[in-house]
Image 1: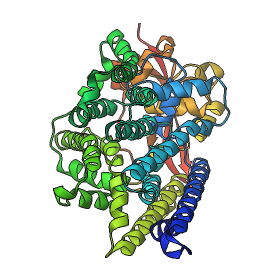
Image 2: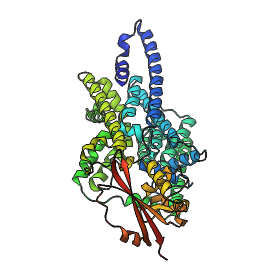
Image 3: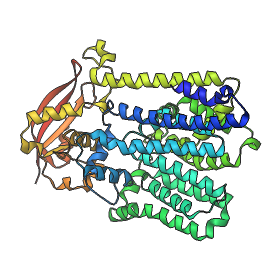
Image 4: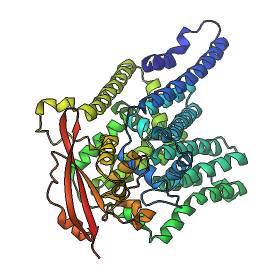
Length: 511
């Protein structure tokens, strides 16, 4: 389907009968219908895929802490949790329902990328931009399916970029555009901390290309609206000793790890798709005199994010490759135009791109099936290789079912784990009937919600059978001011073979 769409977009005019004006009218008509068709396909694909992808750790954690309304949260600004909090009020039975607003964010991001490329280049480039965003693994899942802040961040950044192009380069001065820019920036600031860097670069863009508006009423209205997105985060951090800023600041380990650097670079190419990365890089390498002012604008907004977060990767082994993805996203319109202009090896590149999408789909599908059945390493019997780690995709519903059958109601009401992700997964698996707390320092936002007042008497510890952390952790529990009074190990299975152990540990607080 994507091959046909790309082929039709790039060669539609060759098959249109009649005069040039009629051809152009029919071309616009067909492209509009093609765009509508593509967005319907995008939406239906996301709604279908979400049924087969279990909640990942970050999603389960987000859904758990979002039940407790707060000005902001430990890990991220509050917008994602606020959206989830509103949905919690409707008491939906299916947890996949919480993904629908984020699917909408992803579709709107594709639309804004379409508008950016259409404004700078052509409607053909716009449609290709929407497709390139959709087929990127990171933007498909984190940027438009999972309950994560990347979806609203990408939407607001793409939207603000499009509005800014109209204000800066089209010399428009409509107050509604200024209000829209302020609202989109406010949403970005409420989504993720990367937006702060985007806000700074956008301000620099106004200084470079349209500094005359910096002292107008409309600019100050937009600025004030955008700054409102910073207020909840600042107030929460002031009340909590700036824990969010300290947490992210301390993630820089200043340790050089060559393997981590190589893995991060390859991860970015995988998350973006290597062919899209190739199109972006070759576009940036062309002669400077052929780079348009609109392209310079996109480069200014995107490169600081890409460069700064890759520098962090160089000097910290506690960094993540996806931090720079919003920067790469802003260069997708450049990649789309590059694909349209290529003549010598265009078909080869399209074929390679479709092949890479097919490979990604097969890989992800295989991993999802393997997480349920273990078919890839079935021949290893009980001696599983250490790389066979599908803990992120564990069937926590099954674990919750085992615990429900094993424990008394009083024990279920006093559950805890040793980290935020297990507590989030268990709470979501219980459909929030039994909130699970965290013992120890790895609680993230759990230490800011009412669960800290509960009396925990049962600790749940889930381990894979090939984990190298099977040592007795009695001393660790003791350091958290708890004694272990009883411990029961319950095996759990992936397919027909044992894959891990659920340790049910009775604990009591040391007075």
